[in-house]
Image (tube, rainbow, N blue to C red; front, side, top):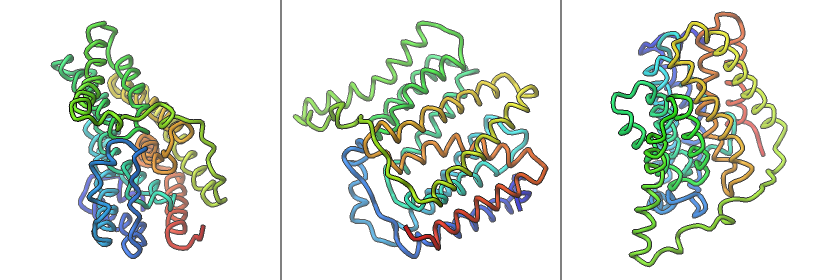
Length: 323
């Protein structure tokens, strides 16, 4: 069945819709919780109207957002030519990964932050051949600064931005200054607005955001699901490395940026309050990109095995498991 998604065709989109709604049909029947907290970031204030949203609207919103995020990720990878040919396997991998953990079946700020994080990675990879580099770098920094303010667990993207500039472009002090200026711009205007309106108390203190967090012990099925996802991601990483010799320099650099993103989004769960479990979605973006690459390029039995294992675990977790 993986072969359906290896071609960029209407049939692939049709099957993506079927799989997405089938995996998350339980969310349509049992509306997901809307979990929005002040420690998540300033998305808390923007998403307050959702607290009073109709249950069926919330259910439909969740499933549609998962589907649109998968398509957005897929569009980015195809647009950057990071895959040997246009395919829908990254979208498939993202949908399967988001179905592995029932605790992700919630409407959280992380769901909305994923949109910004995908565009951050897209803008990072476009820096290599940007026609107006300073403008592109400033907008890239601006997007990173805005994302970090809106969703605190996205703070590692500030570090990812520094590595991305280091990877994609040769060192020029003016470009680093422009990047830092772009990152600080949202914080400058937010701080000025809060100062003028007497609401500086809304700014969090460091101890309110950062802490060494001991994650709760997870059920065996969740551990198995995470291990399978990790194996699929590692398989994708080695597949990218194996085909790297035939790729353009920009493509190889882009995959390096995705690797940095994967490395820095995982520790968020252990050091930022309120990140677990919703912040898994941030790590799912680069992880699904690697897994999608492997599903698309390998013609042996492995893609079929991983697909059916991930699908089976997702179906069981969403429909039959009791935690």
